[in-house]
Amino acid sequence: MKLDPNLDIAPPIKKPGLFARIRSNFLTGLVVIIPIGVTIWIVWTVIGWVDSVVLPLVPNRFQPDQYFGVNLRGIGVLFFLVFTFLIGWVAKGYFGRLFLRSAEHLVSRTPIVRTVYSGVKQIAETIFAQSETSFDKAVLVEYPRRGIWAIGFISTETKGEVADLIPSADRKLAVFVPTTPNPTSGFLLFIPATEVLNLEMSVEEAAKLVISAGLVYPNPKDPTKPANDDQPAIAAQ
Image (tube, rainbow, N blue to C red):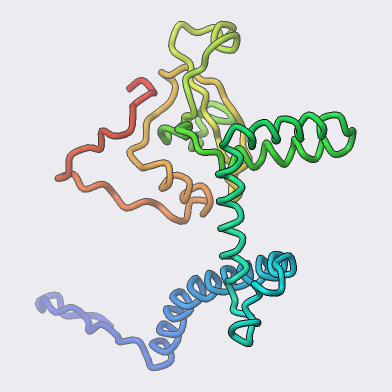
């Protein structure tokens, strides 16, 4: 349809039809329901699995069905939390540490068991150990070649033999470059501090960007708000 050039009238906007509105509302409902439903299902399934493992180990007089007539879901999780707390409390004491050293010494002399135990212990310490060591900042690095950029996380400043052997007068940084969609695997790179670009987004926001394969970008920073100085700027500006 052609408009008269003398008339400054825009063509009327066509409203979506009934089927289009139904389809839009249905898809919006799926976006809301699926994350909530999947989260509830996963939590419910994990709680049931913990109950199935823990409750058979609990004496009959402490079983919930003895008092309520039914097995209440989540009681096994409660027993597990209390038991784990007590084990941690005992392990921090003198006799607990002595017992653990003796047990680990015995395990270290068992060929197959020591391999499994040491591997599981390293994984558990990496995930659950309480320490102040964490990624300090999200950065951009040129990887795997010049002109291609990847998101990385600064873990620490490179020291020792590795720093001495890298032919650069600048400070070197240990940067972890995660893979998509599994950020727990990746590559450890040692890069001069002048060759990384600092990102304003937090480590959590950068991790979401990596996991989503570039589909979820963080909200832009409000220019009226002061910059966040809590994160140390390890990389050179």
